[in-house]
Image 1 (cartoon, helix red, strand yellow):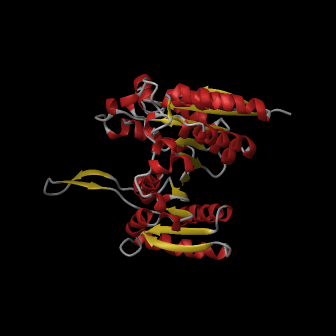
Image 2: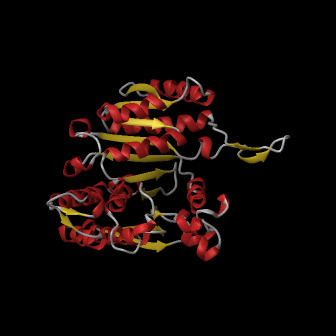
Image 3: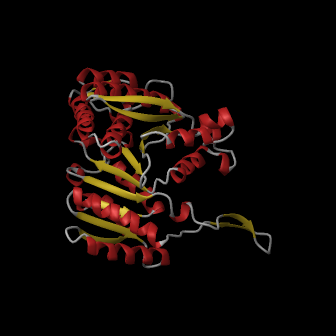
Length: 359
């Protein structure tokens, strides 16, 4: 019996429409092979939504996402909207989507593909074999804490305020997911905080340590965020799964991404407790190459694979996509961001066609 899924597509801005078109075509072919039927509905977010409605996240978009089984997001933002008030910028729409769907956790893998190992800026012996999963808390911390804003002091001087805050329940929820993720991998979890100077981090460390008692088969370690950043560059193979807060996770997951040589290759999953998740590449909208058929669609395609695996519980279909990506790279196809000598240069559409031919 054919399984049916409703997927909301959020192409967004810049290269977003180009790369999500490739991922959609891949999903259609895989669906035919795996007896899955996808119904796709596009909605506006980011700069495209601002231009059309004046808001970075229209209520209609949030309602459509809530009614779907999963959400596939491409990229948002661009120079065009950089000077708008913060509440009207594309990034505010993304934060609103996370809050509106209660996307409390972000999973960001950083895995070295053998075909691209020489694209890394670090030496082969440092990065070969790296396979890291960063579990980032997504709806708390300094990005959402209050009070926040720019205020005038009694002397008339301006003062900027952001509040880093976590409730015990928020920490417990992400810590449990961190331990469960580590259980499915190699059984090691590193919790990253700044407990030596931040009270909120001390609570974080206390709660993660307490939760660890329920996961005796997972080896837990702790690192301060500055040391964690240094260790990611010095010896990244020591890490298996990392769990951390919103701000630290934002920074460390980008650092881990660049170990792989191209941020254009990496997918991510944002998960809620009981609603649809959002699956998106970790790269930006790249407005400088938008519409030029230069974008690398593989991170978007791999995000669709994560959607199948984590959101729809269709691991066979996910594996089919992941293996197709591997075979495309084995065949030597490369977009500009991962191009190397002796490989076959192609564009966004060409990479999509190569994937479809292999599938």
